Image (tube, rainbow, N blue to C red):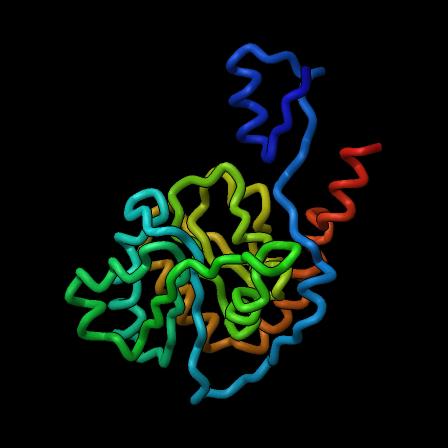
Length: 228
């Protein structure tokens, strides 16, 4: 009788399948913002500070863009950026099959999927803390119906750097809560990381917008609308 869609991309897919618009209701992925508010993040700026990058995704090499990580990392290493890139998700340690990661273990932290078996709402507190310790979320997915990790990152006040793609363009607002680079332009992607590392005060200003932009995806708000 009723079909719930999580994004405009999915809505159009359902319409293309012949489902009538009056049977569709908007029910996006959401997060409990009250849970994120419990944990603070530090805004430090220093030329010697490690620039902390984070990506949260299962190991799906092409879909999630894992095949691009070493290429971008090589370019930002060439720019002498002092960075640490956390990659969290199921089978992330498969990256170690690539010699680049074996040779640069000091620049990466590979963490398996952080399960939530003892808390009421996702994501688990331990994952939130990883987000909060980060300066920039790196999204390399080539397509997403709705990136739940995007709103988790924004709820943690961490801006997102992403290729322009379906899914991301419904959540990320360029130069407001994140930044867009044209698809597969690895040079510009690395250059944007360099610019943000050099302009960390500007990045802190962007961080202030992140939480504001994700309020429309609050679990209580979405649930009440659905039940109304």
